[in-house]
Structure formats: C-alpha cells, structure tokens
Amino acid sequence: MLASFIQLYKNAYSGLSRNSWYLSAVMLINRSGTMVVPFMSIYCIRQLHFSIVQAGIVMTMFGAGSISGAFVGGKLTDRIGFYDLQVGALFSGGILFLVLGYQTTFLTVCIATFILSFCNESFRPANSTAIAHYSTPENKTRSYSLNRLAINIGWAVGAGLGGLVASINYHLLFWVDGITNILAALLLLKLMPRASVVSTIKKMEEGIQKMSPYKDGIYLFFILFSTLFGMCFFQFFIMEPVFYKLNWHFSERFIGTLMALNGILIGVVEMLLVHNLEGKRHGLIYVVAGVLMGALGFILLIYLQASVFAALLVVILMTFSEMLSMPFLNSFWISRSNEYNRGEYAALYTMSWSAAQICAPVLGGVIIAYGGFSLLWWALFGLSVVAGAGYYWLYRFISRQPGV
Image (tube, rainbow, N blue to C red; front, side, top):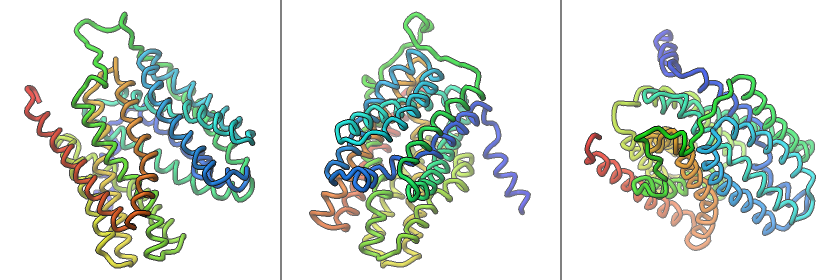
C-alpha cells in the first residue's frame, strides 16, 4: 500500500524538465523572502505614523505598479527574451526593497513602492513564458503546478518568518526580501544556461503570425471571466478570515491554521490531482468544476452553523476549487499563444489577477457595509456562477471550431 502511494507521487513528479525544476527552485527562494507586502500596511501605520488612508494609498501603489509592470514585462519578454528579463527584474527588485526600507515620507514611499512593484511584477510574464518554453504539451499543466507549489511553500515560509522578523525589527523585512530577490537572481544565473527567446519581426518564421492578445476575442472573454473568478477567489484570503473572527468567533491561531491547511493540501494533493486529470478532458471543464465548487463554499458560509467541521469543509472546498481551476487556467492561456507572443499573453493574464486583487477588498468592504457578510457570500456565489457559465460557454464555442 505504501509502495503504491509512493509510486503515485513519483509518477506525478516525473517527466518534468530539469529547467522546470530550476525555475521552481528560483521561485521558492524568491517567495520565501516575501515579507514586506503582508506587513506593509502595519509598517506604514505603526513605524512611519501614516494614517489608515495613507497606508491604503501605499498599497494601491503596489497594485498600480504590478499592473503596469506586468504589461511592460510582457512586451519586453517578447522582445528581449524571458531569461534576461527575469534576472534584471530580480536584481532590480532586490535593490529597490533595500531602497524602500530607507524611505520615510509619504511621497517617497509611494514612489518607491510603485517602482518596486513595477520591477517585481515584470518578472511574472517572463517566468510564465519560461515555464511554457521548458515544458511539453503533455506536462505543461504539471509544470505550472510545480511552480505554484513553490509559490505556496515560499509564501507560507515568508509570511511565517515575516511575523518573527517584524517583531524584532521592521527594517529587517526589507533586507530579507531584498537579499532573497538577489539570491534568486544569482541562483538563476548559476543553475540555468543563458537562454533567450527573442521575438522580433526579423526572427519570425515564415507562416507564424504574432497575434496580439488584445485582438484575440476568445482570450479577452477568458480574461474577463478570470477577473471575475479572481475577485471571488481573493475573498478567501481577505474577507473570509474576518468573517471567521467576527461572526464565528474563531481565534487568530485557529484562523491561521485554516489558512495553512490550504497550503498543505495544495502541497500534498495538487500534483497528484493534475497528473491524473491532465489530458483526459478539456481543461476548461475542470476550471468550470473548480469555480462552481468555490461557489458552493460561499453558500455554505450562509447556511452552516459555526463549527470546526463547517470551517474545515469550506476551506477544503475552496482549496479544491483552486487546485482544479488554477493549473488549467494556465494551460488555456498557453494554448492560445506561441513563443513569439507568449509574453504578452502571460502579461494580460497576470494583469487580470492583479486587477482582481485590487478590486476584491473594495468590493468586499462595500458589500459588507451595505448588507453584511450574507450579502457578500450571495454576491460571490452569483459572480462565481457567472464566471463558471462563461468558462463553459468558451469550452462549447471552442469545441465547435474545426480541428478542436
């Protein structure tokens, strides 16, 4: 029995390219140092004595920089290649974290935050393009799942250590975040040979068209539905913990355990799940199932009574929603692109999630102020159903096209 279980894991992780593992290792180092963003609002208020409004504006600068950086990063990826951009973004981000730690005025903090976020987020389209480049059609979804695993483990380590570091000295957060960025760049230079996928008109092969994602109608609908889904998904980390505290009266320690369970389940289950599903049905079918599973989780928050079992059930549903949808969403945008325009496709997908992350707390706060948590869960249920129906419509539309 144990041998069979171990073999399942071997099968799930086998067949991935060495460079896919290297890219995930770089991501793990980079994300393990993610400490500034989770504590930035507290730092602005407690250490810099900014108002709550000013702290909110600083975090908005993070969002604005991330969207701008993703847009420019996608274009640069298709022009100079994913390798150079990843190295440049990691080095510049590391230096800018150190610079940000020494800013004390509201204006300079806002400017430094925007530039830092811009450089940091330009890394994402290049990294996504690199993963696609080093994967095959048979393992591309698992390659992204491995990268997601690295992100989740790194985020858990960074957030956990960040609390300890902040209790000692807030300025250390910027040093740790900056140094891990630079270490990730050095690791990338060490582990991987210099590779460049340059996309220019001169180098384009005859017969290959560089379609812009902004002219791909199917992809634009996909981005719309992904933004709606993202606005719902982020409430799991933004407003759901608040609900557990205020309405279900759970302790912070138990809420933290629930959030940690999400990462643990992803680490243990996702690669096995994707390995067994990949290639058996169209990826959008799994996305629809995942989105609707999340919708069910929101409804349960309305009708279930506060209990450990209820909370665990909802977290498990939301986590399986994530594991079913996220890897196959990545597979879809890859399938719409080629190596000459993949950076821009990756950028637009990244921008949709950045926009959702900015809108989610505003949406949640306004709805709660107007009608309480019950109205929020109903609204998120409705948005999830719309997104799920949209993905299913895309699947039906694509299935009717010749050659699909």
